[in-house]
Image (cartoon, rainbow, N blue to C red; front, side):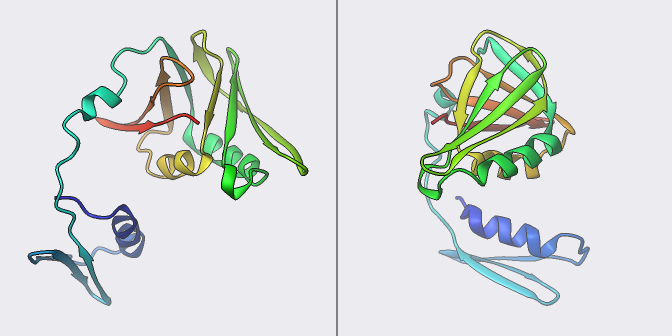
Length: 171
C-alpha cells in the first residue's frame, strides 16, 4: 500500500511545527488524516513496489562527493532558474574540491555557481533535474550529504540520513 507523494508532502508541510495528535483513519480505498484544524483524505494506491527495486539502487560505486546540503540546494535553485521548464537540467562539473553547477538555456544564456565539495573518483560530469535534488535536500537529516555513483548515465544515490537513501536518475 502506498500514498501519493504530493499528499504526504502537503501533510508534512501542514503539520510542521504542530504537536497535536494526528488521527489516522484507514478506509477501503482511502485514508484520512485528522488533526486540529486539518482534515485530509487521499486515495490509497494498492500496488506492489517493484520486485526488482534493488537492481535500481547502486550497490557498488567508485565515485563519490560530499557537500553541505544547504549550500548545494541554494546554488541549485539559483542555477536552475536559467533552465527551461521543459528541459530542466543542471550539469555538475566535479573537481577535487569544487562542483561547478551549469545550466544552459538556448537563447537566454548560461548560469554557473560553485559549491565546495570533497570528490573522490574519475567520472567528473553528471546531469540531473535540479527539482528532484532540491526536494531531496530539504529532507536531508545530515548537514553534509554524500552522492555516490558509478557512471554518468547510471542511477546515483544520496545518503541523506541514517538509513535514508535517495536514488536519482541522470538526464
